[in-house]
Structure formats: structure tokens, C-alpha cells
Image (cartoon, rainbow, N blue to C red; front, top):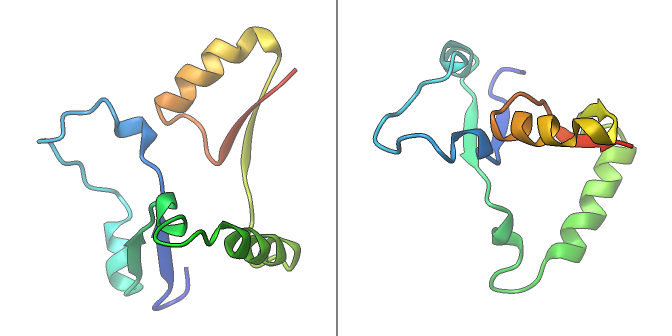
Amino acid sequence: MNLYGRVSLCGCISSYNEDPTTYKTTSLLPLILFKQLKVEGFVVSRWSEPENRWPEAIAALVQWIKKGKIKTRSHVTEGFDKLYDAFVGMLAGENTGKAVVKV
């Protein structure tokens, strides 16, 4: 991350079944502090209310990906027989990026 960079947080599926009264800190706190990063939560529904801005968002994202401004990651699991393991792994936070099962 660059000094004064911006970080968007979206998704926390691996913590859905955690005790909401017990907070865990991230090992990234020193990086956030010393790089003086701005961290902001992002909820996807923000783009559908009050007006539908999905077309604008998709168009911008496609351009950013094409220009290399956004890098995508996928965690690919091979084989339909591994579908269950891939799903459980996704819920446990064992993947980085989009979880995909290649059949």
C-alpha cells in the first residue's frame, strides 16, 4: 500500500457465525497505522438506493479492470466432487478472492 492509501472492506462471510460480542483485531493494524491508510466499509446495496447506479458502477469497474487499476483474484478448486469442500472453505475464510469450482 502507498502512504495515505485507501482501502475498501467488503464482505466478512467467514465471521458470520462468530460471537458478535467478541471482536478480533487484524494483524494489519500496524500497516494501517504507519502507512496512515484510510479504511472504509463498503456495502453493495449502497449502489441500488435511492437510485439504481448499477449500470454506472459496472461500466466503471470494467474500465478499471481493463486498465489494470483493479486486479481480480480467484481461488479455483478443481472438480465437481470438491464442491462441498470449496463451499465450506469459503465460509471458513480459506479462500482469497472469488471462490470458483471448475468442473
